[in-house]
Length: 295
Image (cartoon, rainbow, N blue to C red; front, top):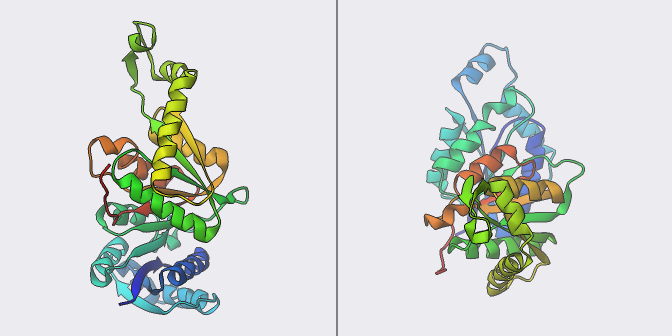
């Protein structure tokens, strides 16, 4: 049976980018694309009163004028945008959902923006959340935050596969989380200090940094990564350090799991994904329906 990709769309210019992106994934996965266009009752009332051009016409215009080689089907639904996406997810059971994080018009929010949050939280499918790239972004760089829970292995392998197909360099990141306040007797003090003081102490401990880097390299090697890559170690709040690296590298893509299945594994998963979805300027490849290995 052919693979399936669900692609929620609206009638704004960003839709053309989403169509092209979906087509590239469709060819890569040998998948049929299901373009899903929905509208609320409020939008429908405006259309019926002649106060608004039917958004369906805008989407169809973009589809007709954007080359798409993959097999595709268009679906039109009425109802709350995020609920139609979740309903379609259950109906078609796709391998992936591709959608934009936001649009640049108020009307265009009929399908995007906050709906991405609902789908991320309530859906069960891997997502590619597209964000229009800034001109200064490096399209050949992707950041891959990992911890050492079993899900990290799948993240590393998926990232490597994607990077090979797109000729992208991967930047694997491990963030050792630090508490807000802590007793630093273990690092030679015996008094309480702020987490930033602790982070500075650790950074200057070259031996510990080297050990953490080697552990990360070992995890990458164990997964037979063949793409060009680098490893990075940092200390502090994971979502802040992930964002810092993305911005510092001007990376175009962030690849990570939506959550971990272990309590310890929540080091860089879970709520960090929510924060990054709202604050990172790059697109996000968010793995959800992954297979777990033993750590």
